[in-house]
Amino acid sequence: MVRMKNPRTLPITLFAVFLAAPGLAQTSRPSLTLHGTVTRAQQNAYLEIPFTVPANIERITVNFSYTGKQDHATLDLGVRDPQRFRGWSGGNKSSFTIGIPDATPSYLPGPIPPGRWHLLIGVANLRPGKTATYTADIFFTRKGEAGGAESFTDHALSTPLSNQARWYRGDLHMHTAHSDGSCPSQSGKPVPCPLFVTLETAVRDGLDFVAVTDHNTISHFNDEREMQPYFDKLLLIPGRELTTYSGHFNIFGSTDFIDFELGSPRAPDMNSIVRAAHRLGALTSVNHPASPTGEICMGCGWTPKNFDMRLTDAMEAVNGDNSDRGQNHTGYWRAQLNRGLRIPAIGGSDTHRPVPRPGQPNTIGHPTTVVYATELSVPAILKAIREGHVFIDLTASRDRLLEVTGTADTQTAHMGDLLAAPAGTTLQLTVHAKACEGSKIEFLLDGKPTDVLPDQIINANDQSLHAAWPSDGQHHWLETDVIDSDGHLQLLGNPIYLNWSSPTGN
Image 1 (cartoon, rainbow, N blue to C red):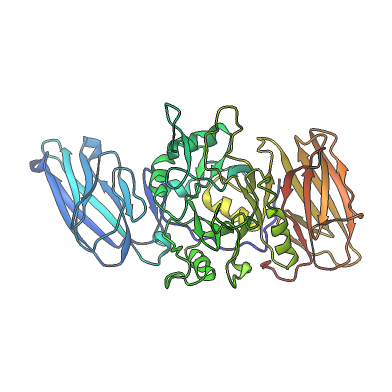
Image 2 (cartoon, rainbow, N blue to C red):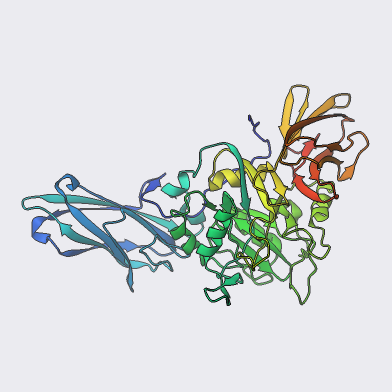
């Protein structure tokens, strides 16, 4: 299907080098380059090549190459910092990165001390009479450079897992052993749930992407870096849940630490925390905003003082199975739209038990956030969320589909898009639904049913339905949902925004 460019699209800054990969592609010049020639006389020796790391560096990336491979020259690779050994990959990697939250497998993450480092080169093999010339391009990422995105991007990051433009299904909120996620051990005891087990469950549930959002920590990013090459059909979106005593929100797309100590000099208010995330190019989403706050869950409801809701990029309109003790996150989200804010709705399972108990349904993907993206990559998924090209599948199916197209005069819009419909024109709507036979289409104008757009029954497994709305030329938002025969919400669609004056929505 053809998609229009959404006027709300915001630029997405590539985030910190995140995925393990065979090589790293540069978008700027290296900070320094080391050259040298190795001779047969150095066979089986270890060379320590010094280089100086300046202060205030948060990441080092090395691209290493050498000549003579046609003659079976083999040079191994490692590195030491001024204080300790930081890793050895031998001959299995030609590139590596070391950052504070994560590092290429074989290397240790952590602070980057300034001073004299040494690139370790092991001369594994050189034939008699032969030499090898090496080149090591070294990139430094300084504090405040959004994880080094301006200096380099990871090869695996820049290579989508799929190049197909289509609907992708995922879960944007889950917890593992890096916070309070648990699952049964081999003997059936509850234990902190390893990330690998969580991802295996997501694969079995048929998801295309997940965001692991452990509380406040960045420790899981190193595990994700190691696991992404193995899970080459499941996109791992860097995420975390910033948990404060006045509200929780997710951050997607950055691995840099963001201070969550609300009220401290480093994070005086919620606005400053969200702005810090935006400076890193991250997408932010308010979580379970209508939850109560108290001893059961401190800070679960959204209650920050003087928060500018225009700062949020998305909102969790469905959390878990949406029956959480009567909490109406969907209503809270709709109330923000009626305030004139344009905030895409997403969902998240918020699962803390990714492996279900015997006889219990799976929790991962309940609900599923379904995103129309041009490819399966982190930038493409986040861009589609920002644009509101999203619907939420509360049934966690693998095949239910909701596509909404609106036309007025020569304009066409989809969920999340803006559409000008002057007074006297007629908005023509086409709703394409799959795997929803027996359910009905419900239209909400500014959050309420309207007699002008009555419900329509879905009579086929794959069906397109049509409706028309005579525009009054006023500012509106039109939401399209799928409701089952018992009146339960199955699919929640993001609105088409009619006659909104601001091209950026908020």
